[in-house]
Every structure is written in structure tokens, then in C-alpha cells.
Image (cartoon, rainbow, N blue to C red; front, side, top):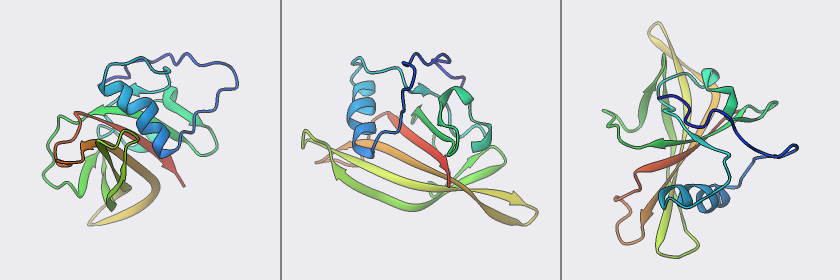
Length: 155
């Protein structure tokens, strides 16, 4: 899947570093509801490549290499705790950290992953981390949104 909005149309000096709540309420919720929002994130299959090969158009912090994407959640993974991506995998380190959406009808589920590279019979942990944000309903959290927001960064 290619980057949908390769040209990010942002004003000079714009610094895109949203908090978890801003990322969900100002971007993900509006994306799901087809409402207008600032053109700061595009769609990309974050599981097709290694994190260091992500499109530069979505990098918002040169020194920290932070990337932000939307991704359709239409894939099924054999193991939800370890998702293949490129020549490695994203392994979950913190599962289902939840907080309420401001409208109190939705719940936000945040999962945290670390990228591991396979080397021979071993796997080496990298310094790349990923936050996945999914919106579910308070009465049925398992029924999440078809789109997720991702923050990928190097520590």
C-alpha cells in the first residue's frame, strides 16, 4: 500500500507531535467519521516494511524519527502478540492500555510494540517502538474501528 497523501500540506514551522488524546480525538475519530481534519497523516501499511524504511513524508521529527500513519485493520495475524513486518516483527510489550474518549461513549485502546530483527536463530530487539490506537465502544470494546492510528518512533 503506498502513501495516500504523499505531499503533506502543512505551514512552515509546523510541529506535529500530538498527545495520545489529540491523536485519537483530532485525527483518528475524524478519519473514521469522514470529517475534515488537518492533512498531517496518511494511510500506509505499517506491517509491510521495517521501521527504518518508512516513507520520509510522514516523518515529523528528524532527531527522533517519529512517524504517524493511519492503517486499515483488515488483516488477520496468526499471533496478535508478534506481527511480521519486513524482515522482523513487532512484539507487544504493553497490551490494551485503555482510556475513555471525551464523548464517554467510546473507549480508546492503546497497544505498545517493539520491533525485533531476526538474526539466524535469534531475535534482536531494536530501539524502534510503535503505539497502536484503536477506538472501541464502551459496551463492546472488542468491536473496534476499521482504522487504527500508529505512532512509530526510535528511542
